[in-house]
Each structure stands twice: as C-alpha cells, then as structure tokens.
Image 1 (tube, rainbow, N blue to C red):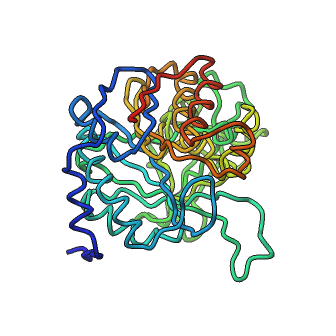
Image 2 (tube, rainbow, N blue to C red; image 1 turned 30 degrees about the vertical axis):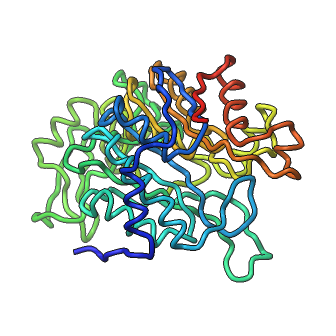
Length: 385
C-alpha cells in the first residue's frame, strides 16, 4: 500500500481533468505539431484522436523553485500539485499500452511528484528514478551543497507491456575492443577464464601450445576442459603477443548486443548538461531567451530507450522546444519518422527579459522560433485562443 497524497483542492483539481475544454479547435495531423495555449485544454483536445496513441511523453514542468524565470515558477505546494495533477490524469490516457512517461524534476518538488506519479500511474508501474548530472562545475558560493543534479522519473503505462530498448553502445565502449592479432572475427577484448565461484578448486588445464593454467587462488574455472579446448581450436584464447602469457578468452565485439542495459546515473559527458543546452540555443540564434533548457542529448537518450522509428512523442511543457528538436535529430541519426506534439503556453514574456529584448512577446513564439530554425521551415502551429 503506497502513501496517500492529499492536499486542499485535490478533488477540484481532479474535476478539471473531466471538465469540457475552454477551446474548440480541430487538431490536425502533422509530423511536428506545436499547440499554442493552455496545456490542460490541449490534452483534452488531443484525447479524441490520440488516446492510446502516444508512445512516449517527456515533460519538464516548472520545478517550483520560487526563482524568477521567463515563465511562472513560484507556487505553493498545494497550487503546484493542483496544476500538475489533472494534466497527468489526462496524459496517462494518451499513452499506448506499452508506452512510458518521463518527467524531469529538481529537488523542490521531487518528493511530492513521486507520490503523485505513484497515484496516477500506479506504484507498480514505476520503472526507475534517473539522476542526471546537469552541471560539471562546483558552486563554491552555495550555502551548503553545490546542486549538480536533477531527476528523471520514469513510469510505464503498464510495466508488464513496456516496450523499452537498451542504451546504444557508445564509441567509448566499443573502443575497448581491438584486433592486435588480425583475428578474422574482428575486434575483441581479453576477458578472464576464471570465476569467483565454482566447485573445482584444484583445476589445471594444459593447452595444446604447452601453457599450463590454473585459476588464481580463491577463484575457479569459468569453463570446462572441453570448452577450453574448443575455444582454443577456434582461435578464441589469447596467450599474449609472445604466445606464452596467462590465457584469456577473446570476447568479440561482433557477438555483443548493439545495446546495453542503461544505468540510473546519467553523466553530463554522456547526455549533456545545462551549459551545452544553452549553447544549442545560442547556435540557433536564440541565446539567452529561455533559462535552463534541456540538452537534446538528454532527451535523445530517452527517445532511444522508449521509442521506435515510427512512434509519436508528446511534450506538453515544451519550453524552448528541446523535445521536438531532439526528435528531429534522432530521426536524422537513425532514419526514423518519429512525430512530435509540443504544447506551449501563450503567456507573455517579462518585459525586461532577454526574450522580450530579442523581440518575443509570448512563450510559444520562442518554441516556434526554435522549431523553425531546426527544421528550416515554418512549423505547423495550432492556437487555442
């Protein structure tokens, strides 16, 4: 039994998810769609045609840090919960049975968000809590700790049906495999032929080249005599460059899966950081117009784990448009035809902000500008009023 989460206004917030939308707009089919307006209404308008059709939802909602941004980010906890709750209820019904939702969050509301996600999606459908290293420098002016991480909470629509792939092997992982002896099977890595457990502490094996091998003290043979003979006959035992060193098995790169099991710690070197994300915006001519966007490498990792080449991706807190940008990049990388739906508020930007100085009036204009810059064409935009 999970811990019940309750707050003043919870019932009213839930009722918002079933109330009729305030807008009445037809949502067109498009490869990459931007809906400008209230995301609560957008989710309701998407429901008739997209219920059970979205493979992945990635959102980066306001973190409730009580710091001033280009968007509202200061709520009481009750207000924040009442804002996010009906949207999560609607989002759940948009997911495919084998789909997933991934939510970025900081420390300020991580504890309440986890309880809320448990309630909406079911604690039994919790997949993982990922820690992302968002910064690589230490803030020595921090009062207590330098805040260098955020979380990504991952939930399945139905854990038993979740379609999740491994993480693509990196060039760094593959670089450990070489081919110093010109083996026709290609690059390989030497791996031990002893193991930590077993039942033959007195094992000794003589190879055909005269090398006599026994496991290190406290270890056991990983393979039988017959298996070692077969591996040697196949040329899959490495005796060093002089042919007389302690033997190791060759583990071939070609025999490994193309994907590996992901970990719950994502380093900035693997998936980017906040500085990189700001540089991406700057390179598009949008430097400084949106604070702390997510790097596309981070979202591409999420896409690689939870989507295939023809899936639909939804981000209803689209921010600067990082998710749609990541979808386009991933499609270019693997030849996919993923589609994206982004929803962004039409709230005005603060008059003294960098966004206003750059000529933007509303938040959705920033998102549209990024999609235009990335795609090289006008995005398909639906305005809710």
